[in-house]
Image (cartoon, rainbow, N blue to C red):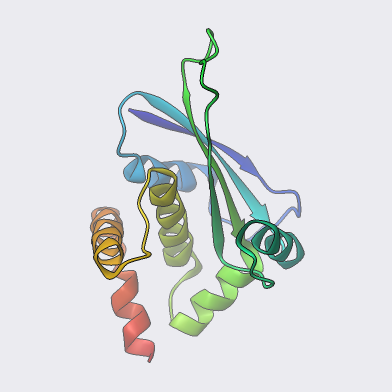
Amino acid sequence: MTLLLDIQNPEDYTAIPAETDLSHWAQAAWLGDGEAGVVVRIVAEAESQALNRAYRGKDYPTNVLSFPYDPPPIPLEDDETDYLGDLAICQPVMEREAREQGKTIQQHWAHLLIHGLLHLQGYDHITDAEAEEMEALETSILGKLGFPDPYQLSTEEK
């Protein structure tokens, strides 16, 4: 059970967690068997907004976008690693939200990475029941990593 990360940082952001931390958090969120891979692209607001507009019809930058991989009907012979898909995490939005919600950058990074990875594994929060299930799973994973409940922090700010 291993989740392999390909970290892309085209803007050369320096205030991002160490790759070992990102890998540790991602591994905690990997619920599957065997090996899987995911690309984590750290983007600026312009790229986040363009992706959000193109794929969700929403014309603003957002914290994390998940793009599940849709495999071809006939698997490639040498493809031993499942590919989950891509995550685009917008560093400026993530930092702003962390400040607004009274979280550390590390806490919010871990939360958004886990949130995005759960989306790539089929979880969603469209209905109330789905949201409750996904939030409980996020909170459990984050708790095992030593992070507080991200939703409790958010509600205390309101």
